[in-house]
Amino acid sequence: MSKPYTLSPEQIARLKSHSRREKLHRTISYFSPLLLLLLWEICSQTGLIDRRFFPAPSSIAGTAWQMTASLEIFDHIWATLRRVAVGYVLGAVPGILLGLILGLSAPIRRVLGPIFSALYPVPKIAILPLILLIFGVGDASKYVVIAIGVFFLMFYNTLGGVMQIPQIYLDVARNAGGSRFQTFRYIALPSAMPNIFTGLKLAAGSSYIIIAAAEFLGARSGVGFMIWASWQTFAVSRMFVGIVVISAMGYFTILLLEALERKFVPWAKH
Image 1 (spheres, rainbow, N blue to C red):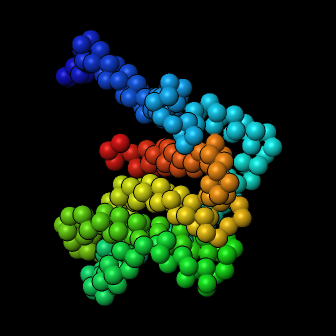
Image 2 (tube, helix red, strand yellow):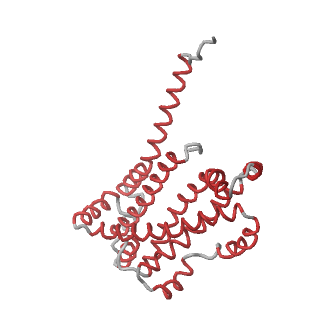
């Protein structure tokens, strides 16, 4: 019998070193926004930037503490998160399903593909006034405009993932007597999952951009509304609190999606 293969001390040392570097790089990526805040604080305190327009992060933190103590900020955060979550789901689910269907069916792709190609370039904020006319200034209009933006990102990323599947895989499944559902479940969906998570992360960022603009125009709550109201009264520190908060919301949403990707798509490159 052959002896079991064992790693040499040098190989073990290299693996441990690689693991430590990976952990260090991941830690740096988590805390890199804090380095940006530190640089901002130094530039503001030394007068390199105009504090009337760019208050020091310490000043913004003081304003944020006051808003936190009064619980005002949490009302705005909850309003924005609720709108983003509902619109995100309403756009992502049909986007993924239609991307899978069109990717597997050339006839349907030829019929519907040009329609989506024509609609995609339309700026989503440009149709917000029309959406407000139809759905009113309540939350329904916010759900719809986010869902539209998310839908196209999910659709095209999912479609791209399916279109990259080698044709031989689909031919083998067909020749083996696999049903459409089995092809969908065991070939198309796993192959498209890395692209789907890429779309989910892109859509998350776009959702916060869209909701901020939507809350500028037609809302009485939410982080976007807080930013717009602060601009109108030249409350610059409050405005920056809103900007930092919505940036943090997007950042942590993407971190959550990356954690889910590592769990459910371990075969993808991270």
